[in-house]
Image (tube, rainbow, N blue to C red):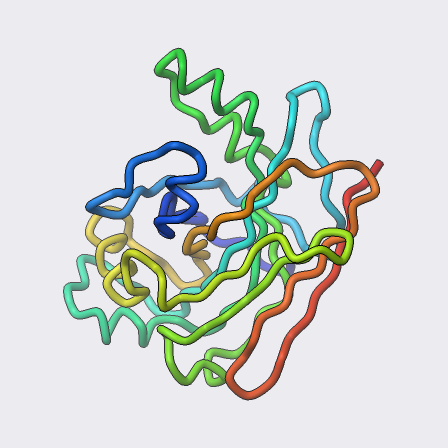
Length: 213
């Protein structure tokens, strides 16, 4: 990455089917957490984590790059205009550790914000997006379809989501927003081959990576 965002804002439980698969309630307002810039790595670097920390789950997500400052914005259309590029990203989650921390009532940044926990592919100019509620993407692991995302099924539409985020976190140029993952998350294993496909409305984008041994 040539530049670092000031922060990476992530959305939890943004697809009802994912919330249900983990036994969580479907939220009535966006669930937000932040990853630090040090968590960000390129997809070309591969996927790795400290195995002593337990299972690591993949979460494939539509990811946005903010190119204009958003602060306390109330108009979803103006919020959408601040997006400069999109891509797919992996929000890595140390699931065993997260479950332990939740049980103790502790914050779970250790499980979500560790170095290398935010992996993103190459940016695609926002001009390729013609309808924000018709973006489709998939994740294959070892050629098996594991996740299928469709922004039509987001609990909170992207413009409204960005406006909500801007009420609590000023989004600055270069900041990254991970919009949440659909159902199908599971543990990664050494040697796994991952393929992420973004069905752009003008062309298809495919990225691949692997889990380091």
